[in-house]
Image (cartoon, rainbow, N blue to C red; front, side, top):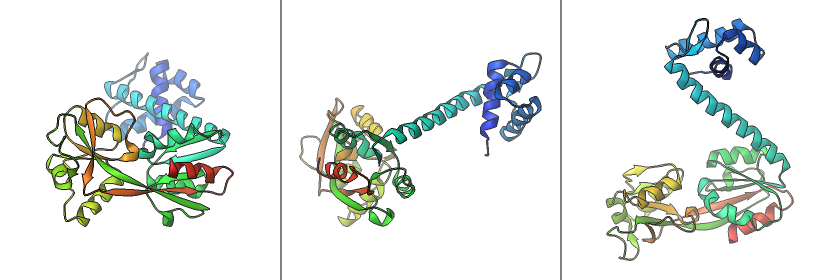
Length: 278
């Protein structure tokens, strides 16, 4: 559904001012324009967002819309802040989520440059790199996706089993691939799932996760709570690990390659070297 920012702003202004006239004045728009924005939104939602009267109040649906609208405005302000920070940085780094847990922060603390870091998926990183938004990209995608790179470096990263401390598989050494699936493994999402599937097939097994999540923290929280086992790349593991979580190698080992793509800007090559050797 197509919802315009002007419609969300109109709802927020109504919530604050209780009048179409005052809301229009606050927004610098005409009263009829604000009224049309609200009416259009109501048609698209199929429900009223405001009770019209001497004092305009929001309906239950309108209050929900306002709550989401405040979040949207907050995120837009955060994006504007990122743009400002990016122009003040010496180096701009884009990285997949797993690299922003431990690797990138640890390296950035060691360099004197002002480094701006933004997290993104591989396709976003490729687009930002092509547009010159970032100077370095830490990605699981190879150089064929990163045109214009002056260089690219690689480092290998192992997948590890993440288990509740009292799980039956703990204490038996490396965890077998089939045993991990049979225990109800959680897929960490992103590109890890396809990489794990390829690794399993290469060893005659099937990657059939019981859960698919989207971030490292959820996998660790599920394991710490004893809900299930998981698998994560080593670079994504925090130090120290959460209480109640044990990490073990896989048998046979599975891994992935992390690529660091570098633009020809001062300091970028040195930072890339640290990212691949730290």
